[in-house]
Length: 165
Image 1 (cartoon, rainbow, N blue to C red):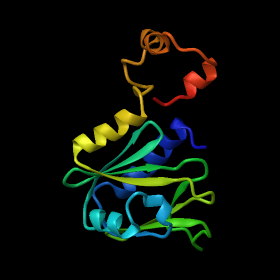
Image 2: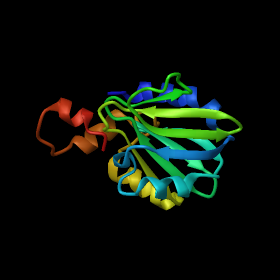
Image 3: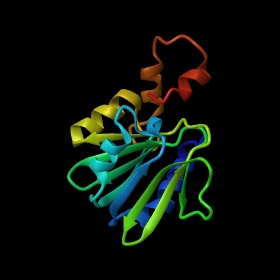
Image 4: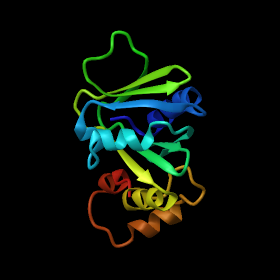
């Protein structure tokens, strides 16, 4: 499973390739990737929008588009994002074409990865508030913070530390 440092590395490599570009075409080949939306609904909502930033929240890649549209992408266990691979991998789930010319594919052999459309800043904040706790690199992430959220919990410490909430 890509861990947070790996997701940050992917973000760092992809950001210069996509920021400032317009998503010309999005082809979701696996309907499970875009649930609960149908692939065409997700594509229609994002095509023609400029990518303002590619960020990371926890293990999610957060695509920030023009007009407060967001794509929260999770790679899960076997997902990857590749720049114009030739030949295209067998387990391609999504194709992204940008203007000016740039092609990315999202590959996921086990089909666990997801992409969720979030419209508006409040929808994006609510999405992450329900799934993630404080960013590990945030200055508020201290021993005191960990002590406070661990108070009263029973169970293995490893399970507590791996819980992304």
